[in-house]
Amino acid sequence: MKKLLIHIVVIAGLFSVMDRSSGMLLKFLYNRSNATDAYKISYANETTRDAILFMGSSRCLHHYVPAILETELGASCFNAADWGIKNIYYQYGLLGNILERYTPQAIVLEVHPCDWLQTPFSGRERAGSLAPYCGVSEACDDMLKLAGNYWPCRLSTVYRYTGSLPDLLFGRWGTMNRELKGWKPMDGQIDTTGVKAEEYPFAVDTERVALLERFMDVCRQHNIRLILTISPMYVCSQEDVFLFARQLAAKHHLPCIDHYRDQDFVNHAELFYDFGHMNRQGAEQYSQKIGKELARLLTDNLNETKAAVPEIAD
Image (tube, rainbow, N blue to C red; front, side):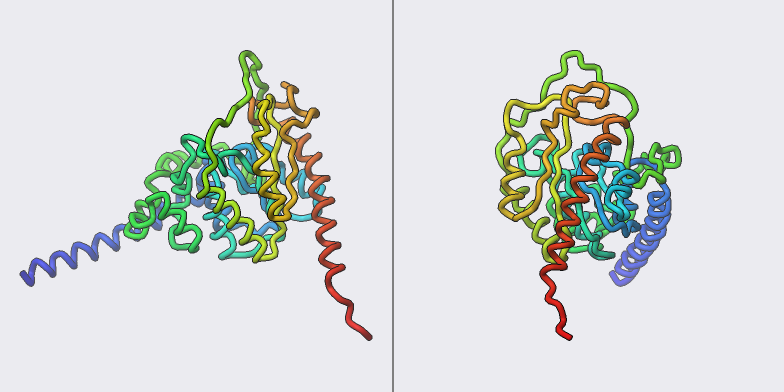
């Protein structure tokens, strides 16, 4: 019996050493990958210290051009968005990890109905992309628990990277250009044949709404200027699908810049790659427009902050 216990302890120890050493190798490959997921997640979690972060899913990833925004805003920017329906479960966990390293001056959150509706294929599992960063922050761990990934990630470092194996194996040939600071341009033009507006006939998800509000509260607690944005689509629903987002922003006294039906973009095929994502030309044009709007908002906020600080008497 004693020998059996010794063997079990030895095997467990060897497993732990192998797991940790293999995990370090996988982390090395992950951080150097130019695949979209690996690069965006690793850089956002470990490296960026830019003053203004742009967060959201694929529409944010493709629509916000840091080079243009930095010129308009006079501050460093990074597009921390990622594709794959990265909803509020992912965004909340990512925010927690970022705040463990530094506090950005402002966050621009591109919202999508998947952030507050029970949309299919966009549930808690989206937080699973944060598996490599299990243990970094309480917020991240909470989201991994909801996704069902937490305990396997705690037990095995290798497990954290099992969903990223293609990025690890072929990441050096990935299409992310690191000089673009997180922006992923789309080249091409939409085929307008049969294109219809995307509809959202889904119920409100109270858990997602609560996370959105927690995201807002955390930004407020850290004195981060939070701005919600809604970028254009090629065709728009007859329903006011973003009414909830605007109402939630108003409830929390936050600005919400809504360009969903912006006629400078809607039905302009030359500006879109597909019905929901602008191409390179559209993204550059949109970034110039919203950059000026964000600059006014952030300048107004700075002036309000200065006005609220009493002068010291001589």
